[in-house]
Image (spheres, helix red, strand yellow):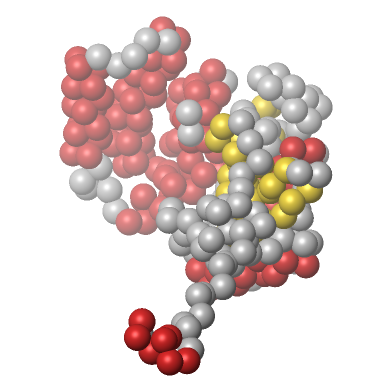
Amino acid sequence: MSLFDKMLRKGIEKGVGDALGKSIHNAVGKAVEQTVRPAAERLAGQAADAAAQKVSQTASSFAEAGAAMTQAQDAAKDISDEQWNQALSFFEGMAGGMMKDMRVCPACGELVRGEVQFCPKCGAGLPEKTVMELALCPQCAKQNPPGTDFCTACGAKLPGRELQEEAQRSKDAAVLSEWRAKLPHFPVWDCGGTHYELVELEQGRFCFSAWFNGDVSAAEQAVRQYVARLKESGFRTAGKYPSDAHLYKMVDGVCFHADTEHCFEGDSDAPSVYFLVADEPTGGFDYVKPEPKKKPDGLFGGLFR
């Protein structure tokens, strides 16, 4: 359910219909009331009924919603731009009032009203700031719409974006902590990016990925940097077909293999590095290329050339 859907549902529960009936005339004028209100009430009634019954929409309910939307569009044809702006301002103000004491759970996205410290859905701690406070610019004090990342007046990063980034940093730190526990013989990733993931594909085979938000050059540089980190940690080329894309390290008789050959086969800004435990290269870790046979010299040697 989207943030708007949650707002609509909670608004219906608090009596949006009553608010419209009491306030819309003064806020947007008689013309808007006569055209917008009937269609808005029909759509709100359908939404409230669907939420109350908790059933999936049938073909008939889609038809009714479509018919109501068509009626709303027909009724709105004669509304001037000024009247529409007045109507939008009214509904934005009403939405802001509804959300002034709401907070969003950083773990599951649940919209929570009131002075509670933990999310009733998942139990995660809730932020101190409300949805509206997270969109309030700390530099110029402009109140931006909820969900805005950067201030539309001065471009400053908003508290909501800061909160999202802090939550992601915590998630990434947890992934690296898991890495240290499961892959202690491989150097921990410290080459940038975000949205880390560490997946165990099968026993002894892991895949780590990081996201660089469209910056392909930074992603490629990060992989080169990590290859250098592997070499600094004692990993080296080995086997019959040595390559920097496959580096190995032998520890107590167990061969550890870091594979960067296939790291850009998915998204070019999200490299994936594969780690294999007890996986030796073709020919073995200690493979030595045999010396070429020397051609015989002398009188008889020339007969065999």
